Image 1 (tube, helix red, strand yellow):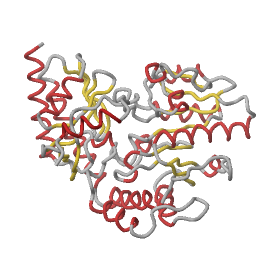
Image 2 (cartoon, one colour):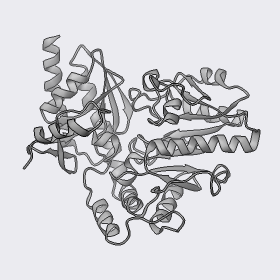
Image 3 (cartoon, helix red, strand yellow):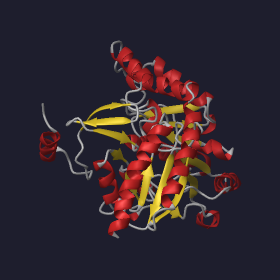
Image 4 (cartoon, one colour):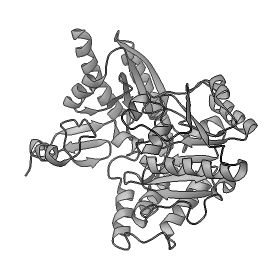
Length: 401
């Protein structure tokens, strides 16, 4: 049997170096736990970067995949796919939306949204109205279009010229957004909570003010819920905390409980702009992924997962705040539900490595923010275990400062 080092050596020869990979070779997952090729067990508070909201290999998702794989794996979107229709019905029933476009990832969902806002605006206002306002520190994907929308210079470096027509404003600053609007503006695109940018929650009332501003200026509002949708913040969709609705919402990551899928949800008026030939996806909405997503969504809605997310999110926040108060270099805890960040006054990369060595998987975003996105089924006991490990690591860091 190959060891972790065997796999790492082989991978180093042929896998592109787009990720700075940790020396962990994952071979098995169950619930909130992950095992490597050497038999080591890890408490997974990264969850595939907010993908495994139901934990690893949830039995209902596994059963749906096995059943569908034995029946029909793929067919063209020239035909009707029952599980795709079921999933669209669930998403529309439980959101503002009327229609859904399915794809394979968050970046693809955001590409679809950007095409849709431009097409809608061109038909309604003329082709000069094409600009989209996004936020600084945002993250919308790694295609050439989505890095153009992303408000981080580092993400765009080396890939210029990017797609024109994007403006970036400080997240949470409604006056800056108002000032950025021009006769060419067609839409605003925001994450309700920024994930990659440092787990940033906007000020109270900000998203409502953005909705009002978009209505006043006849602009479309797009919410990128790729990371924070599907229960991550304690409501099914993050926008529901603010009692408003966007015109378009993008989903991916956790939608199918682990397997790859993306979706763009839109109102009837806006979605009607897409007609045959304007957009498409060969694999989008395929039977296998949509069957898994139907099972995953039913688990979220029917199995008490959202209630657990709220309760465990509150508990994890309390424990992180208690830890933070013990260490001079630890700062604010921020986030919502079970996407939480601990701000540090020191780079977090080494802390992530030390935590992994002790059996806890987390990551660092924005250089110095430890991000915690455990499965939404996490228990108090598992949170306690994670905090014990993190406390040991932070104590060692404090000693060596």
